Length: 261
Image (cartoon, rainbow, N blue to C red; front, side):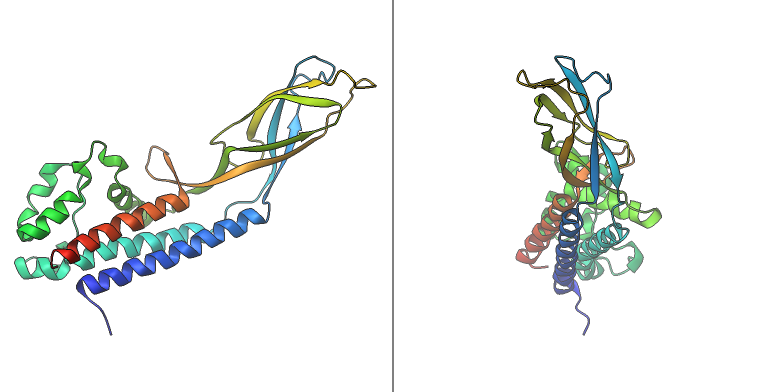
Protein backbone atom coordinates (compact mmCIF):
# COMPACT_ATOMS: atom_id res chain seq x y z
CA UNK A 1 0.00 0.00 0.00
CA UNK A 2 1.29 3.46 -0.91
CA UNK A 3 1.60 5.90 1.99
CA UNK A 4 0.88 9.57 1.36
CA UNK A 5 1.30 12.75 3.34
CA UNK A 6 3.34 12.78 6.51
CA UNK A 7 3.42 8.97 6.74
CA UNK A 8 4.92 8.75 3.27
CA UNK A 9 7.32 11.53 4.17
CA UNK A 10 8.57 9.71 7.26
CA UNK A 11 8.99 6.55 5.18
CA UNK A 12 11.10 8.47 2.67
CA UNK A 13 13.23 9.84 5.50
CA UNK A 14 13.68 6.35 6.94
CA UNK A 15 14.80 5.15 3.52
CA UNK A 16 17.31 8.00 3.29
CA UNK A 17 18.75 6.99 6.66
CA UNK A 18 19.09 3.40 5.46
CA UNK A 19 21.11 4.63 2.49
CA UNK A 20 23.20 6.76 4.87
CA UNK A 21 24.02 3.68 6.95
CA UNK A 22 25.01 1.87 3.75
CA UNK A 23 27.24 4.78 2.75
CA UNK A 24 28.94 4.96 6.14
CA UNK A 25 29.73 1.24 6.03
CA UNK A 26 31.05 1.50 2.48
CA UNK A 27 33.39 4.38 3.33
CA UNK A 28 34.73 2.63 6.43
CA UNK A 29 35.33 -0.61 4.53
CA UNK A 30 37.14 1.19 1.69
CA UNK A 31 39.46 2.94 4.13
CA UNK A 32 40.16 -0.33 5.94
CA UNK A 33 41.62 -1.72 2.72
CA UNK A 34 44.43 0.90 2.85
CA UNK A 35 43.73 2.23 -0.66
CA UNK A 36 46.69 4.65 -0.62
CA UNK A 37 50.45 4.32 -0.24
CA UNK A 38 52.93 7.11 0.34
CA UNK A 39 56.61 7.82 -0.20
CA UNK A 40 58.99 10.27 1.39
CA UNK A 41 61.02 12.64 -0.76
CA UNK A 42 63.99 14.90 0.05
CA UNK A 43 63.75 17.91 -2.30
CA UNK A 44 67.30 19.11 -1.50
CA UNK A 45 68.80 15.60 -1.74
CA UNK A 46 71.22 16.41 1.09
CA UNK A 47 70.77 13.88 3.92
CA UNK A 48 73.79 15.24 5.82
CA UNK A 49 72.27 18.69 6.42
CA UNK A 50 71.42 19.64 10.01
CA UNK A 51 67.83 20.39 9.00
CA UNK A 52 66.57 18.27 6.15
CA UNK A 53 63.33 19.30 4.41
CA UNK A 54 61.09 16.47 3.32
CA UNK A 55 57.84 15.90 1.48
CA UNK A 56 55.41 13.01 1.66
CA UNK A 57 53.59 12.27 -1.58
CA UNK A 58 50.84 9.87 -2.58
CA UNK A 59 52.55 6.95 -4.36
CA UNK A 60 49.53 4.84 -5.32
CA UNK A 61 45.83 5.57 -5.07
CA UNK A 62 42.53 3.95 -5.91
CA UNK A 63 39.60 6.09 -7.00
CA UNK A 64 36.74 6.23 -4.54
CA UNK A 65 34.08 3.71 -5.62
CA UNK A 66 31.61 4.84 -8.28
CA UNK A 67 28.81 3.55 -6.07
CA UNK A 68 29.28 6.32 -3.49
CA UNK A 69 27.80 9.18 -5.54
CA UNK A 70 24.93 6.87 -6.48
CA UNK A 71 24.18 6.13 -2.83
CA UNK A 72 24.38 9.84 -2.05
CA UNK A 73 21.94 10.49 -4.90
CA UNK A 74 19.51 8.02 -3.33
CA UNK A 75 19.80 9.83 0.01
CA UNK A 76 19.15 13.21 -1.60
CA UNK A 77 16.22 11.99 -3.70
CA UNK A 78 14.47 10.51 -0.67
CA UNK A 79 15.06 13.61 1.46
CA UNK A 80 13.69 15.96 -1.18
CA UNK A 81 10.72 13.64 -1.71
CA UNK A 82 10.11 13.48 2.05
CA UNK A 83 9.65 17.24 2.22
CA UNK A 84 7.39 17.28 -0.83
CA UNK A 85 5.26 14.36 0.39
CA UNK A 86 4.80 16.12 3.72
CA UNK A 87 3.12 19.21 2.25
CA UNK A 88 1.47 17.83 -0.89
CA UNK A 89 -1.96 16.95 0.55
CA UNK A 90 -2.03 20.15 2.59
CA UNK A 91 -1.27 22.40 -0.38
CA UNK A 92 -3.68 20.46 -2.59
CA UNK A 93 -6.43 21.16 -0.07
CA UNK A 94 -5.69 24.88 0.21
CA UNK A 95 -4.93 25.43 -3.49
CA UNK A 96 -6.82 22.72 -5.42
CA UNK A 97 -6.26 24.45 -8.77
CA UNK A 98 -2.48 24.34 -8.38
CA UNK A 99 -0.96 21.75 -10.76
CA UNK A 100 0.59 18.77 -9.00
CA UNK A 101 3.96 19.46 -10.63
CA UNK A 102 4.07 22.88 -8.93
CA UNK A 103 3.51 21.53 -5.43
CA UNK A 104 6.67 21.09 -3.43
CA UNK A 105 8.18 22.14 -0.14
CA UNK A 106 9.70 25.59 -0.75
CA UNK A 107 13.38 26.11 -0.01
CA UNK A 108 14.25 29.77 -0.46
CA UNK A 109 17.32 31.92 0.16
CA UNK A 110 15.41 35.22 0.12
CA UNK A 111 12.26 36.27 1.95
CA UNK A 112 10.73 37.67 -1.26
CA UNK A 113 10.97 34.23 -2.86
CA UNK A 114 8.86 32.74 -0.10
CA UNK A 115 6.21 35.47 0.00
CA UNK A 116 4.26 34.28 -3.04
CA UNK A 117 4.01 30.79 -1.53
CA UNK A 118 2.87 31.74 1.94
CA UNK A 119 -0.84 31.50 1.16
CA UNK A 120 -0.49 27.84 0.25
CA UNK A 121 -0.30 27.03 3.96
CA UNK A 122 -2.58 27.64 6.91
CA UNK A 123 -0.96 29.82 9.61
CA UNK A 124 0.42 27.04 11.83
CA UNK A 125 2.00 25.19 8.90
CA UNK A 126 3.15 28.45 7.33
CA UNK A 127 5.08 29.18 10.50
CA UNK A 128 6.84 25.81 10.42
CA UNK A 129 7.69 26.07 6.73
CA UNK A 130 8.83 29.67 7.11
CA UNK A 131 11.04 28.89 10.10
CA UNK A 132 12.77 26.17 8.08
CA UNK A 133 13.82 28.52 5.27
CA UNK A 134 17.51 29.23 4.62
CA UNK A 135 16.81 32.98 4.38
CA UNK A 136 16.01 32.99 8.09
CA UNK A 137 19.70 32.38 8.89
CA UNK A 138 22.73 34.67 8.70
CA UNK A 139 24.30 32.60 5.91
CA UNK A 140 21.63 30.90 3.80
CA UNK A 141 24.20 29.01 1.72
CA UNK A 142 25.33 27.12 4.82
CA UNK A 143 21.80 26.05 5.71
CA UNK A 144 21.21 22.29 5.39
CA UNK A 145 18.12 22.73 3.23
CA UNK A 146 20.02 25.04 0.86
CA UNK A 147 22.73 22.39 0.59
CA UNK A 148 20.07 19.74 -0.01
CA UNK A 149 18.45 21.75 -2.79
CA UNK A 150 21.83 22.49 -4.35
CA UNK A 151 22.99 18.87 -4.29
CA UNK A 152 19.67 17.62 -5.67
CA UNK A 153 20.03 20.03 -8.60
CA UNK A 154 23.63 18.96 -9.19
CA UNK A 155 22.63 15.30 -9.11
CA UNK A 156 20.01 15.94 -11.80
CA UNK A 157 22.57 17.27 -14.27
CA UNK A 158 25.94 15.70 -13.53
CA UNK A 159 27.70 13.26 -11.25
CA UNK A 160 28.22 14.29 -7.67
CA UNK A 161 31.90 14.76 -6.84
CA UNK A 162 33.13 12.70 -3.89
CA UNK A 163 36.83 12.68 -2.96
CA UNK A 164 39.19 11.50 -0.24
CA UNK A 165 41.60 14.04 1.20
CA UNK A 166 44.27 14.33 3.87
CA UNK A 167 43.23 15.24 7.40
CA UNK A 168 45.09 16.34 10.52
CA UNK A 169 46.09 12.79 11.44
CA UNK A 170 49.61 11.84 10.34
CA UNK A 171 51.78 8.96 11.54
CA UNK A 172 55.34 9.30 10.26
CA UNK A 173 58.11 6.78 10.85
CA UNK A 174 61.72 7.33 9.75
CA UNK A 175 65.05 5.56 9.90
CA UNK A 176 66.62 5.15 13.36
CA UNK A 177 69.50 7.44 12.41
CA UNK A 178 67.28 10.50 11.95
CA UNK A 179 64.51 12.22 13.89
CA UNK A 180 61.55 14.34 12.87
CA UNK A 181 61.84 18.01 13.85
CA UNK A 182 58.42 18.95 12.52
CA UNK A 183 55.75 17.45 10.31
CA UNK A 184 52.87 19.41 8.82
CA UNK A 185 49.97 17.58 7.16
CA UNK A 186 48.70 19.25 4.01
CA UNK A 187 45.10 19.34 5.15
CA UNK A 188 42.66 19.09 2.28
CA UNK A 189 45.11 17.60 -0.22
CA UNK A 190 43.21 15.27 -2.54
CA UNK A 191 44.42 11.68 -2.54
CA UNK A 192 45.76 11.47 -6.09
CA UNK A 193 49.15 10.14 -7.18
CA UNK A 194 51.89 12.73 -6.72
CA UNK A 195 49.95 14.98 -4.34
CA UNK A 196 51.96 16.29 -1.38
CA UNK A 197 50.16 15.26 1.81
CA UNK A 198 52.78 16.41 4.34
CA UNK A 199 55.96 18.46 4.62
CA UNK A 200 58.46 19.06 7.39
CA UNK A 201 62.06 18.80 8.51
CA UNK A 202 64.31 16.03 9.80
CA UNK A 203 67.76 16.00 11.32
CA UNK A 204 70.44 13.37 11.64
CA UNK A 205 70.74 12.07 15.18
CA UNK A 206 74.04 13.08 16.82
CA UNK A 207 74.78 9.45 17.72
CA UNK A 208 74.53 8.27 14.08
CA UNK A 209 77.64 6.16 13.45
CA UNK A 210 78.03 6.66 9.71
CA UNK A 211 77.11 9.24 7.08
CA UNK A 212 73.45 9.01 6.23
CA UNK A 213 73.00 8.00 2.61
CA UNK A 214 69.29 7.23 2.56
CA UNK A 215 66.30 7.82 4.80
CA UNK A 216 63.46 5.33 5.02
CA UNK A 217 59.91 6.58 5.55
CA UNK A 218 56.77 4.85 6.73
CA UNK A 219 53.63 6.92 6.49
CA UNK A 220 50.01 6.64 7.56
CA UNK A 221 47.95 9.68 6.66
CA UNK A 222 44.55 10.45 8.09
CA UNK A 223 41.72 10.40 5.59
CA UNK A 224 38.46 12.27 5.29
CA UNK A 225 35.87 11.79 2.57
CA UNK A 226 34.20 14.91 1.23
CA UNK A 227 31.54 15.95 -1.24
CA UNK A 228 31.61 19.06 -3.40
CA UNK A 229 28.58 21.05 -2.30
CA UNK A 230 28.58 23.93 -4.79
CA UNK A 231 30.00 25.09 -8.12
CA UNK A 232 32.77 26.97 -6.31
CA UNK A 233 34.30 23.64 -5.29
CA UNK A 234 33.54 24.00 -1.58
CA UNK A 235 33.73 20.67 0.21
CA UNK A 236 31.72 19.23 3.06
CA UNK A 237 32.55 16.05 4.95
CA UNK A 238 30.53 13.36 3.22
CA UNK A 239 28.90 11.33 5.99
CA UNK A 240 28.45 14.25 8.44
CA UNK A 241 26.93 16.38 5.66
CA UNK A 242 24.44 13.65 4.78
CA UNK A 243 23.66 13.20 8.49
CA UNK A 244 23.01 16.93 8.85
CA UNK A 245 20.63 16.85 5.88
CA UNK A 246 18.73 13.87 7.32
CA UNK A 247 18.48 15.56 10.71
CA UNK A 248 17.29 18.84 9.19
CA UNK A 249 14.55 17.12 7.19
CA UNK A 250 13.59 15.04 10.22
CA UNK A 251 13.18 18.18 12.29
CA UNK A 252 10.91 19.77 9.68
CA UNK A 253 8.76 16.65 9.41
CA UNK A 254 8.37 16.39 13.17
CA UNK A 255 7.39 20.06 13.43
CA UNK A 256 4.87 19.68 10.62
CA UNK A 257 3.37 16.61 12.26
CA UNK A 258 3.14 18.33 15.64
CA UNK A 259 1.22 21.17 14.00
CA UNK A 260 -1.36 18.89 12.44
CA UNK A 261 -0.27 18.31 8.89
